[in-house]
Amino acid sequence: MAPWPNIEEFDLVIIAQNTLLQKGYDQIIDKLKAVGSQIRTLFKTGRSVWCIIDKKLVPSNNRWVQGYEPTSYDWLFVCPKINEVLEGATVTVVDKSFAPYLQKVKRWTLEVESVYTWRVVEGSMEPSWPDEIVLEPIAVNKSKKMLGARILFDPEKYESGVICLLPKPTECDVHEAIETLIDIATGEERVEPEWMGRLEIPGLSEIVKKIDQLKLDYDKQKSSLDAQRQSLEEYRDIFSVHEAPQIKAIKSALRDIGFETERTVPGFQVDLRGPQLAVEITSITGKVDSTSPKMFQLMQFLEKSHKKEKVVLIANTFKRDLPANRVGRLDFTSQVVGFLQANEVCAMTCVTLFGLWKLARKDQQKAKELILKTNGELKL
View 1 (cartoon, rainbow, N blue to C red):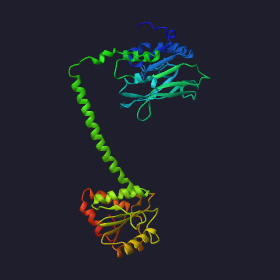
View 2: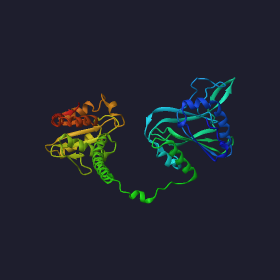
View 3: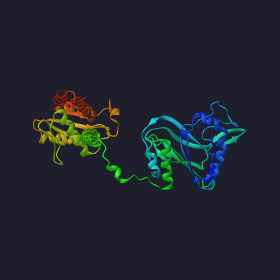
View 4: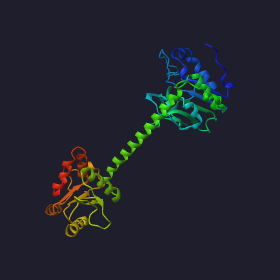
């Protein structure tokens, strides 16, 4: 193998772990500690070490040295804990200075979890996680796990050097990756001649047009789907504790069941009214009993304003509870149910209305008839 360079001569050392194969590692195991001594000298003099990470290698003969198993990261005076995971593709840049390099990372299988050191305890080597050594993310995945990290040290106990762990590139070879890192370190930017963008490439313009059309089609479809999603999400407001969105959602649900209604003027005895229905809506923390103000409003409507329409009471009972936790509870007292039956009023909870709305998507006529034919409490 070629002789080791004098690492202490450099202002920045870039180490590409992804170029180290098992055979090569087995030949340099005993030399890594010496390299580590030079790396520490770099660090103590305020210089930088950047490492393109790869999975740890261990000796193929499984030999241990001084109570611990050597690894391919022994050139560092600290030990990164790097986990192999299923391949991912989300890369969120945290340290913008490394953005040009991270653009070349589209897939990854390694996460940086922590950093530790070794200490001797009763004659044996044990890992230790000192508080004065921490990790700062350079890039993270969707789960906020670190794909790249900067190792930070307490300045009172360590010098001011920098160690950065970087994910290995997938969109270029190692030589281009190192050139990119050198450009980042020196502040240089490789700029191509401006005329290159004007070179005529046969077939390229047609592909660009197709891509533009696909983007246009995608935007149209996405806009349509977003509108449909927003429209459907509004049905959650059937259970809203706020009056305006709840009435709007119930009006939409009744329309889907087959009843057209309109919002009445403020102060009228019912909230919605149409050719076939007059609907009063209430939200309460418990059940509906005879003392409820809504029952008085229904009586006023039946006496003064009722014509031929079906009167419906929709109650968001136990409004703070999950709909699944409301099933089986008493929503209307027997006195209220008796009054409703005597006056041919259909009463239902918001849970029941939600079920009727879902039923109407399959059998609208059945859902509609259940409301029109029920006197008293409607249950599904």
